[in-house]
Length: 276
Image 1 (spheres, rainbow, N blue to C red):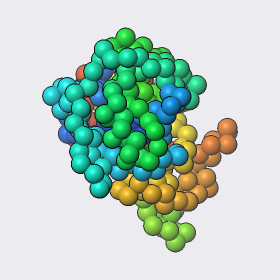
Image 2: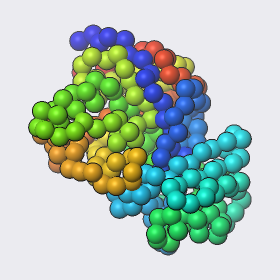
Image 3: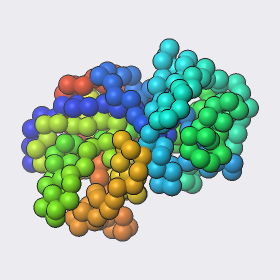
Image 4: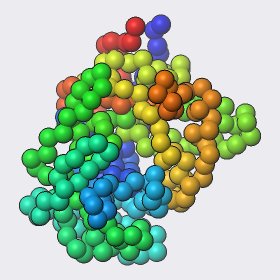
């Protein structure tokens, strides 16, 4: 079935994995996704990544990258900002994201102390090293930084509207799209879940390939403005109609980068191949 023309409604990258995102109107895309996306990560004493799954307050930590990645500013409620000049040649630390095990560049004791104080537990900030080379899985393989598993997360406004209609019908409050922490939100597709059927598309001059639907954890139950859990929505309602064969619930599509380039808000989306 032919779909109306999709356009990029919003564009967000997340400098520090699990923390607040940065909205942009135009951004470069490399093989690992939007430049700077999940290029930093907070880890515990064992090198395991921290997530809003367990540390909901991470949502209120607002990182800002400037000077082409040469300055990272971290802000959080109730404390002063921390300004860091990131290093790529600091000590390497063994880190992990789910089943992936690799290396991060430790960013030093001062920023670790700041983050530990804000989150109320010991942690370290690490950066993707220059030699980083992490393969991703799925229907279209690719590369990524410290993301959960893929270069880009794409969701449509139509899918969000469908979800919120169902949530409101059961007497609960609708949720904003930032609960799902997408990189690209698509407007113009009138049929919900169109993103799930895309297999290859061009956005701006970037070509993306479908990897898999995004199985959701508890993070969408966290209010991204307050850093507090506000569940059970939207997971409760998603479970009514978006349960996958593995038992998880899905929202959004994960994609690999086939051709790097640049994406801007308002760019038209040209789908070259659909799922059969």
